[in-house]
Amino acid sequence: MLPSHESVTGTILVADDQPANRELLDELLTTQGFKVVSVADGTTALDQVGAAHPDLVLLDVMMPRLNGFETCAKIKSNPETYLIPVVLVTALSDKQARIEGIKAGADDFLTRPVDRVELLARVRSLVKLKLHTDELERAESVLFSLARSIEGKDPYTHGHCERLSNYAAALGERLGLPEDQIVALRRAGVVHDIGKVAVPDAILLKPGRLTEDEWKLVREHAAVGERICEPLKSFRLVLPIIRHHHEKGDGSGYPAGLRGDAIPLTARVMQVVDVFDALTTDRPYKKAFTTAEALATMKEEVGKGWWDPRIFGEFEQLMRNHTASSLSGRAVAAGSYSS
Image (cartoon, rainbow, N blue to C red; front, side):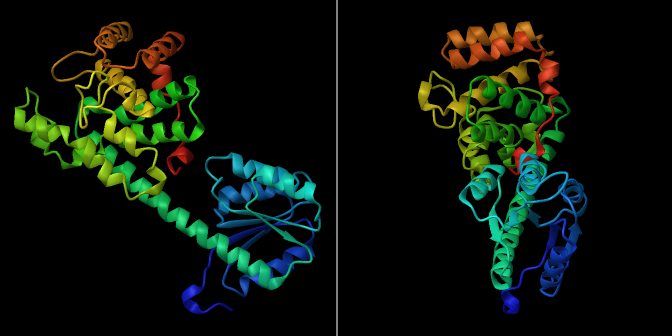
């Protein structure tokens, strides 16, 4: 047994149609401090993944109803469960079976007869990794909660974060961006203005024109937001969006005065949707524009060199194909956030 300072515990879901195999794994794991949930087929395993929230799943490959490959693929395709480690346990040792398991998303393999030492070593390693992942998800959740609390201070910005997440992801998909950049856009939609936590409410909620000193303080929120989120490695692709979504193509934006293509592509996407949402919602100083009015205004700004013409053109077409309300109401994928 590992020394106490290296011990790892958690919940293990075992799926195997052979009672003797389930009993063996149950005994091996429970004696090491793990909680074990045992089921006899893949379909029941999927039910228990949602109910028991396991830290690791051990799947027999040859099971009735859903085999191990199929069950693994379903776990890994679900945003709510894809981070749960899955180990395929099988008597199959041929190369093709392992390739199929890799395609299904399996994190590891064990070959029968299962070696006790190897089993416990792999289980401990993967459960420890899952615990670190859970800590990361909790840290991200704190940031999202902080961002929404900032948004909640101003009734005029209610729902802004969710709308930007949905608009940005939809535009990113239309532009054919890679999945990791679309996930970054979803996250950035929520946390893009998190740096406003450093701006006093008296300035943030001021209904009138800001003084030069007040405006200078507001402009710092992009760099502050980047520093707040920088410790999270999973936010690597989010940071440039937070920092640069207030730049303008002609160099008149902030904080760096970047021009044209020097502005990160994902930040240019966020610029467009952020401006659109600001124009189409009520503010203390103006009534909400219609979609047509907002797009017309933004088209003029494209002519001034503020926004990327290609990205705006795709967004304009997106708005013509879908109503703004249908896009802003699209469900935000929670797994892409912990993501």
